[in-house]
Length: 193
Image 1 (cartoon, rainbow, N blue to C red):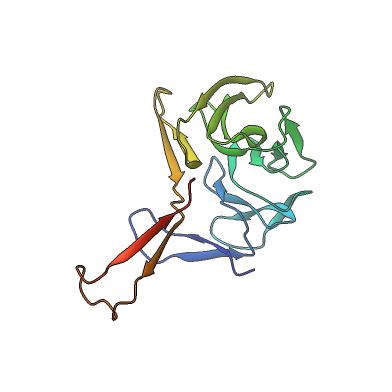
Image 2: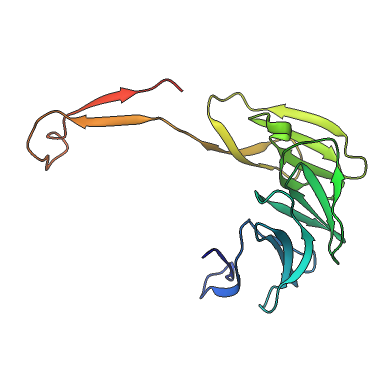
C-alpha cells in the first residue's frame, strides 16, 4: 500500500509525511494532537507530528471510509456506523445501519451526518449520536451519485460532492489525426445512466 498521510499548513508550505499505510480519510482529534485513520484491517491513531501509529480497533470489513472525532470517541463508516474509543477498545455500533459514511457532525457534536445509510444512494441522514436514531433525512434529487456532503453550520444548507458518470465514448471517424478543434470530428455514443 503506497497510501500515506501527510500534513501541510493551511497557509501552504511543504507537506510532511505523518505515516504510511493509510487506507481512509483521516480525522483530527479535537485538540489537534492526533490523526485517526483506517489501514484496511484496523483503525489507528498517530501523533499529528508523526511517530508510531497506535492501534485502536480491528475492522471486520476492510472497506473503510471517513471518520469524525468527537470528544473521546471516533465515529467511522465501516460495517454501518461505529463508535471507537479514542483510547482504543472494542467498537460499538451506532444505530441499526448496515452501511454509511460519516461525513461530519453538528457544531455541538450531538448529531452525526451520515451519507448513504444502508446503501440508499443520495440520502443524508442526521443521526443522534447518543441514541443512534435517525432524526432527519434529506434526499438529493439527482441522477448522479452523491459521494460526499457537508452541512452548513446553521443546518439550513447542504453542499454535495456529486460524481457524474457520463459514460461517453468518442470514436474518430476515419479522418487524419486532428490538430484543431474544428478538425476534431467525433461521433458521440452515450449509454443511458
